[in-house]
Image (cartoon, rainbow, N blue to C red; front, side, top):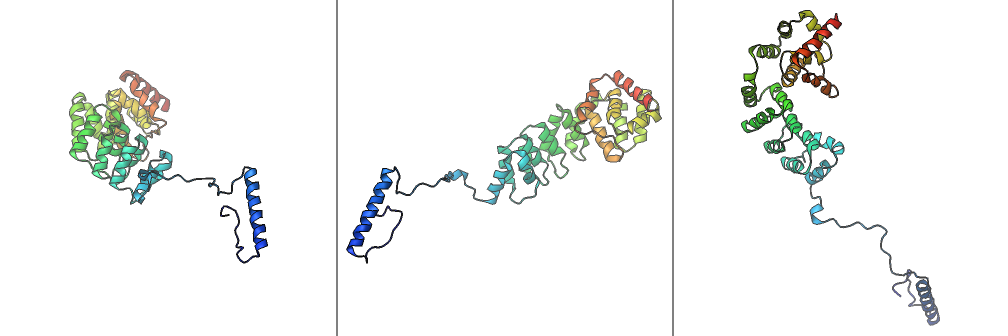
Length: 291
């Protein structure tokens, strides 16, 4: 019988032997059936389902895109890597298929294609836009810069990023056009001193404006904390956007610059909830304590 789990030829065996084998095989088959067993080959314990045609991976590019769509902690090394498979088309697919965390990593990549840049801008996400502006390897056309300027009018962090950028002339002109009229000449002078690398001049002008001791103000502004600088800027009637710009320029020019980590940022920026008079009073107290 073909269903038996063993097979051998009895063609050359005597008739009596062939009859005995046949009866033995028949009995074995009957015993299997009576025990509820089957002589038919069983299915494998594990079956690998067939993937739909649309789920098949046909190229390295498709594989990398699939891996980059994993949770961002797993995808980050790939998104930061310089992989040939991460073509503009692959990155556009990722922008469509992922969210903010992935978009920020894509925005930090060097040499992004203009189509990818515009796709990221169209997400209208402020943190993604700030990541794009903060990427020194990218260049932006006039349309991109006008988009940055529109967001800068509503978002202080975008405004600070635009003002701190070495280029973006169109965006900066739009921001200054809307905010420059509200800023007095003396305040513009303070910003110009910092941009020109005149730290001592900035301290003198700020001390004169706030009627504070110049050497004492210089000492507290040279500390590692960014709080004294925030207090000085707030006391001068400037907002946190100008402070963030001044801080970034200051840090770029001086090694012993005040620092503001991500953890310290909320505390430092809370200074701008004070009135100018309260900020000056607290700054004066810090100067007295530094003697």
